[in-house]
Image 1 (cartoon, rainbow, N blue to C red):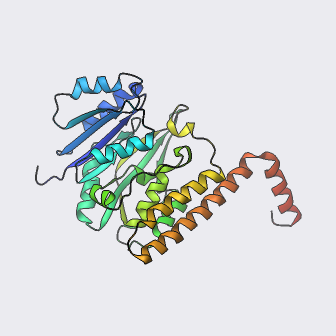
Image 2: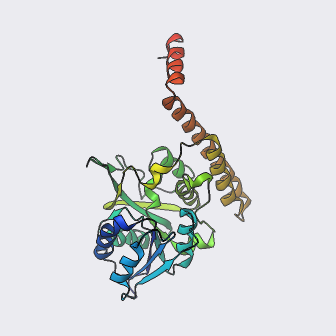
Length: 296
C-alpha cells in the first residue's frame, strides 16, 4: 500500500435507509486500494447504519460511529473530518453516486500537483424527471494557469463553487489551518462558505476524467433550506472573516477581509435578484421603471 496514499472517505448518514443500495454500489465500485471508510449516523432514525455494518463489519477498512447526540449536519461533517487518519479526505453525501475511478483520478491530480490543496471533478445533476444536466458547461479554469486572488471569485461567479465541495483535499492542510466547515444561519450554504475559504487558502485543480452524480428530489436536504435572507448573508460574511482573522501574516488577514467583503457584496446582490424574481409586484415595478427610463 506504500505507493497508494490513504484516502479517508467519510459517509455521514441521516435517514439514509432509502439510499442504502446507492451507498453499497458506491462502496463496492470504488477501486482505490488504500481506503479508510468512516460511516456515521447522526440521528439513528432508521437502520441504515445497521445494514451497512452487517455487510461491511468484517472489512478492516471500515469504521462505524453512532452519533446519538443528534449532531446537525455541519457538526457531523466536522466530526468525521477530525476522526479521519488519511492523507486525503472527502465527504460522500448519502444520495450521490460516484464513478469507480473517482478517487484514483483526483488523488493522481493532487499527487502530480503538490502545491494544490483540493481536486474536484465534473458532476451530473439528475432530476426527478430523469433529465441530466452535465456541469461544468464551461471550463472553470486551466490547471496550468497560476492560482490568483481572483480565482475564488471566478469559481463563485461561474457557479462552479458547489462542485468543489465534493472534491478530495489534503486533510493535514485543513487541520493545520483550522478550515473546518463553519456554522451559518440554519446551516444554509455552510459548504459553499467553506469551499470559498478553501479556495482563498490554496490552489484547486480539476478534471473531466471522472464524475459524481447529484440527485435532486423534493425531500433532499438542499430543498429544505429556507430562502436566503440578509441575515443569512451577514452570518456567512462573519464566518469567512473568522477564517481569515486566524492567519498569522497581516497581508493574509487583509486579503481575507477584502475577499469576505466581496462575498458579502455578491451575496447581497444575489439576494436582491432573488427578491425581485420571487416578488411579482416588485418585478413588475422594476420592469415598468426600466421601460419609462428607456433602459428595457
